[in-house]
Length: 473
Image (cartoon, rainbow, N blue to C red; front, side, top):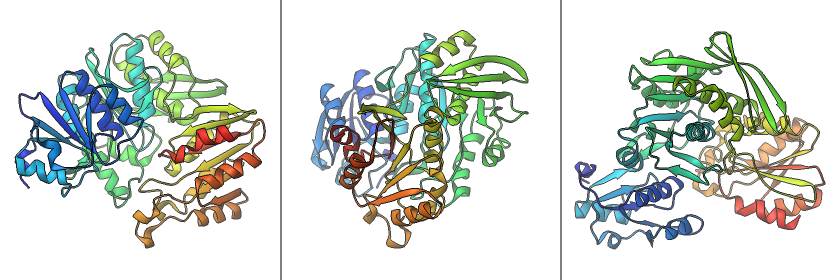
């Protein structure tokens, strides 16, 4: 294995992506295609919507990983982070001596380099915050480049090449590739960054909170001295990290000493109203359709960055009001017989708790039915077994599915949905365990009544439960 091949040549015309159908890799393929490169790719699961997305752009996809997929000898191979070193295509890549790079290396080289990088990172809220920041810049007429982990409804896309001077990127703490175990966000050098939170997550690659904090510390301490870091004041772990930063730091949140502070948050559906102060002085009243205190904080961080970029307050205000949100983030998928079905990406205990609290704030008098599928590498492990019960306080009825991929986890490390349900019942909550998605749908069709809110939380497709449930209702 010759790691000297990990380089991007000066002249690149043809690019092949291994594992092209991932959300980020598919978006990168679309961007490269729009930029004029000849793009091909391969994956072992080729199906809609990503297969359709790529086909519409004339991008050839080979199903299955095979050395023959590289027979045209592309100028560069981009290797997805889910790809192992013994992948047949990777073996062929090394044997052929082809230059290769990781996803963030390619994104940085072809789209971010030369622009002002605006990186949004943290355990929670990255996607919403990055999307909102991108929309504020677009609303201001700056045509930003961006790539985020969800589809922005304002753009109907999760990426934009952009002609403007800025690029908004969601900074992921997950590892980069089999040849680079550092977090993806270390590949970007931001002029401004937002740090929303630091908690333990990604139990498949991080051992504990200290391990996670070390990754974020590397990010914070390598930011240029002239850069600005806007950091949430709500967690001791964040305060500990930013104390070691060499760049400019502006805290935001509810603390009196923070330069950017939420003086008051008021929910009046369909709006959330924010009273914002800056360095102790009234700054303005803003409203956003995003529900929940966590989204109020996300909006505040964007306000702080936008103000530092000298954007007029009326532009910031107008952008917050017109932001349409992100698919799979508290997205109403449909209403049938007065029953509202909402989809959300929440999976970490904190995200489950904050999402439920946000839905409760907008639906005070409705019964909320929480449906949860644990399927991440962390949620399928027992690391959060005793934490999850406290995450469902704002639900009236809880439905927990058996993790669908539990066999991937060592037996002694597995999360138990049955145990979670028992803990919820012992805490006075009405909760039920289900072995599969069909059983959940059958149950909900029988118990849901008009005015109910069914909040479905999973980071996966959940067997298309949303559409199937709406059809049955």
